[in-house]
Length: 337
Picture 1 (cartoon, rainbow, N blue to C red):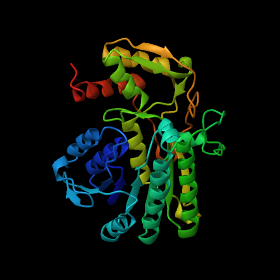
Picture 2 (cartoon, rainbow, N blue to C red; picture 1 turned 135 degrees about the vertical axis):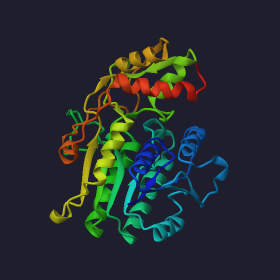
Picture 3 (tube, one colour; picture 1 turned 60 degrees about the vertical axis):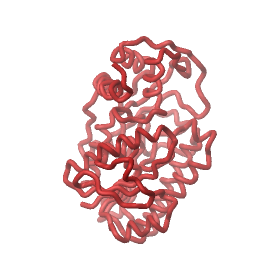
Picture 4 (cartoon, rainbow, N blue to C red; picture 1 turned 90 degrees about the horizontal axis):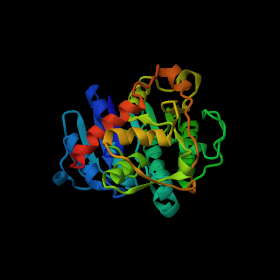
């Protein structure tokens, strides 16, 4: 199939593109290569897909490794995006491009409105004009906000987001629902739970902890360490998305839009996570315990029974193995012994 992956130079988009290529699909990646975090990491990911930095020209199509084509394009460029859909006519769209970061959304709200609302709206419009078999898009566990019922279930209330980031992701779900009702676009929204692993985002806590520990800096541990997260290894996330490609919404029953949790369903205490990271880095962290941050929640825990029943989804990578693999990538990437 022809599969368009937005955010292909991002963490999950990069891994998704590699997986789809390995499965024999024709993969078309799209990214604007913004500088929210060190863009050199995005360039390095693209090199793994056969695209060199010196080739990049905004708005141009580039041929990478066999089966991968890259478009250096911003989703806000509606005219070029529509031209891409006109020429490409993708079978599947996996929309992973977004502005991420709970804290970042407090200080830079406009970028979240631009990317997560206007950018997603442009994708929905393109899918309306050039119908696709299935739109799979990234939502987030942040939509659960102040929800206190655990584990988090897709049927739980999500009308009290704790951050603008969570609010834009919830708004995206509502937009997708409306486009499904109006234009019959089969779509699946995925609520991701704390994805980690090699080639990850430097703004994520585990990556920042690794940097600070290796440089002898103190790490900030919020809520005095009383935090739990449903850490999910990236390969398990990718396997779940890949399986959903073969399980589109049931058009016969009119159930064309659905929301699905995708996580490990096994929350881990933050201090335990740090202990495992220390073990594989071979260093002990200096910890600064602080109150909970604005917009943060003390615990996340995904009920993944819906995804499991639908596709047989069963995460395979435990936390110890996942952190070991991250460190094995991290050390040489950062030029550390």
